[in-house]
Length: 283
Image (cartoon, rainbow, N blue to C red; front, side, top):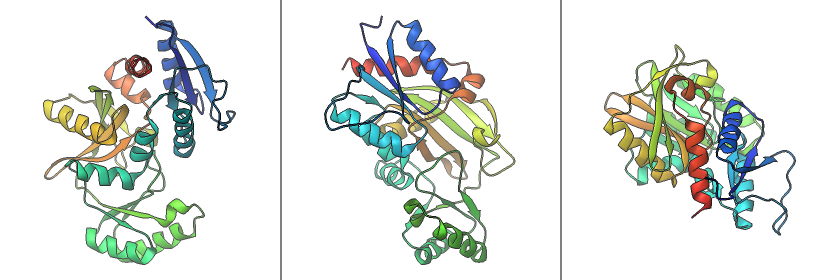
């Protein structure tokens, strides 16, 4: 039963995931308010947004962060919360929190200048991976195999206009199989998982990686839930790799896509998200 809960969906574009979310909301008798992130404006006083809770589905980390902060200012709870969006959406902040909570992660060093980035690469060892602090779908990531290659990539990144490229996130290149693991967490439940395989070192489904069902072992569930809890909990995709010393968590996505995971697992992920979001509204 909906109990009159009005669900706001804050979105950029209506993809299959958003269509499934809207269908799940309709099947539960929920009132739905669509909030286009390109059209909405936020004043200091509460706007005329007739929603009891807002589900963030914006593809922009910046838009999601400021919007969830504004909704919180108006007293409207969001999924995920602004603190979770900020923490999990920034790889530097996320890595620090995972380390603080004892979640195994790849060796990572952060530098604030190209010169320091070269030192960071030497510290991590070649090959290494350079990532933007904020970003998804494997974009603007680079596998660096030598100091000469690193200098060229760092010169290019330094010329990019966005301030985010002045922060250099350096991570060890994990010698893993040709796959990584994604576990979708909703609240306190690990809902589904999948392997993502690719001949490329980046295995993102958005880059053409193939998917396979992933059995959720007790170890995998425990580690994924621990990583999600470290971020603050909510609706999160935990990405893991099989390193030579065991499972490591390399990213936690606060606004995850789930089209590929739904197809490979058959799980009702959209329904789980809607039910959790309604639960947040009732707290």
